[in-house]
Image 1 (tube, helix red, strand yellow):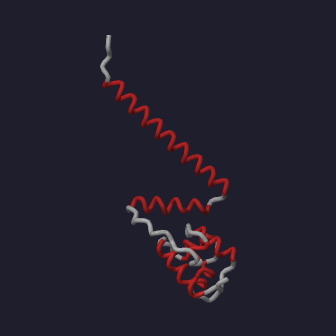
Image 2 (image 1 turned 120 degrees about the vertical axis):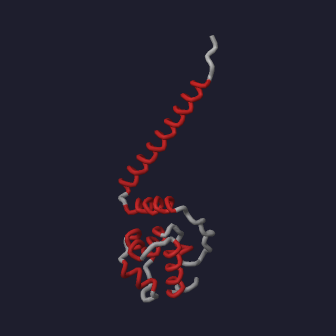
Image 3 (image 1 turned 135 degrees about the horizontal axis):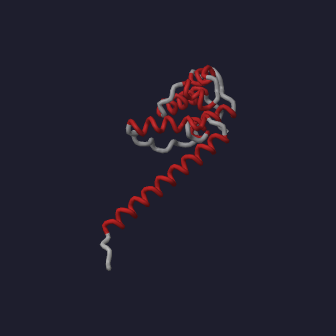
Length: 136
């Protein structure tokens, strides 16, 4: 088994965090790991625990294997439009909610999408009905 390389881990952590346009503070909030610890990991001063590696990987939306550079990363996603980027940043905050609140949010989102689909279908039905000639 390969030994842990703090310098390699530090470089990978910095790379992943910057690719996601996250500050150390934002990564700290998303992972629940103190910002000072993240700084220590990025400066290769401290070796993270297995638990910290798992939490960092989850906050960065990668597997621990990718964070540890044991597996290659998937190709980067294309640049997001400014409005989409803001929406994505807000969605990432959901990860900080309790499990109960996350489920409630997902129910709300599902309900909203279902309502929008019903309204769209109703609108299409009404426009089709008004353009169809009535046969007497």
